[in-house]
Length: 255
Length: 236
Image 1 (cartoon, rainbow over the protein chains, first blue to last red):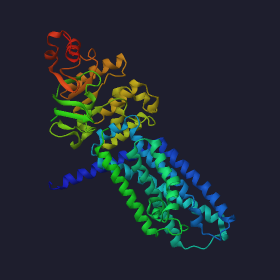
Image 2: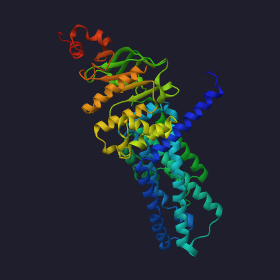
Image 3: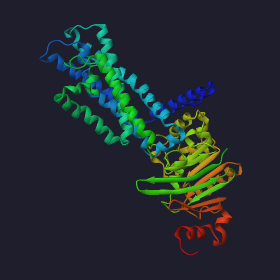
């Protein structure tokens, strides 16, 4: 290959920065982004309070605030997945993909910029979601909560935020592969809420799948799951793998 | 370099051959009309030229490089394909803004192109509420953002009202007069005879005529007569 000279490197950096700015601009100017995020952020406290009440009156012994407050993550991840799918599938509305690819013809760069933009929007929302659940649970449980350590709180909170952000990116990749919002949403949510739980009940190898492995990042109630760090690695690998497959399709297909 | 060079383009989809060796050039300072009946392969050719579709074989170059390798695509080529090319939930201004960001263009360019195509008053409205003609104007505004050397327009008069058609004719003539390259496709001959300098006519994925307007019109009297003689295969 040709030698990379400084000016070439610089213009590549500028091109990447512009692609990221364009993808962020697309994301924040899409009303569906805010509807999805707003709905998810509003639903989470309601679910968290419901789970906390259930935990207070449940048959099990005292549980810690992170354990109870993060129970809702398994449900509100649906909102994050939908956000990812929408970011990808909105390209195929009104022929926007042709505008995108004539403005940013380097497909790998544009594809990477889209994923990064979604991660930049999703990660703070994920952190707020995780923290709000734990704070609400801690407040509601009060003195009845099982003791926990600061280290455990930090680990489960950051684990939950990272888990949600990774699943948002899985949503982008699946959306880019399927190209149509409804089938893509049905595919991912069908896996998360139907196929995943069924597989878990059937085969022990299912714990390496991105939902089970991922729940180890924030949940300490799942007995027999993988270790948290290993879970994080596994979900990251699944995410990168799915993005890579989606990119292969994206580079080859006609638009 | 702002010559468009299409060389022996072949495109197959499954067992169907859509393009069977298309070759022609579009030169600076001229409006080139790329004409043919619906389904002749005009849009496929333009999509390959813009790097949206992959050719089975052959090349399509902007100057000396394929579109996808242009250092600054938006400032080199403005493209207007079918529809608005924009998501219906955004406003016209928001759409132009993200496109402008992709090329590092200043925000004022957005207002300038809105003014040029006459969409300033509709800029804050959702694109979903635009008429067909307004959507086409937005697509043209998008193409003009980078003040490109080359305009590639697929059926630009489709969906425009008579005023809009008249306006775009004048506009494209001015672009060519200032030394830029304009390539437009159309299946409407009558609308184009006064606008184009060079004509390429295709039928079923093959070029059946290529030359200046006078050369192609030849003894047929009008471009429309020449077109039907060449594309229906019947006697003139």
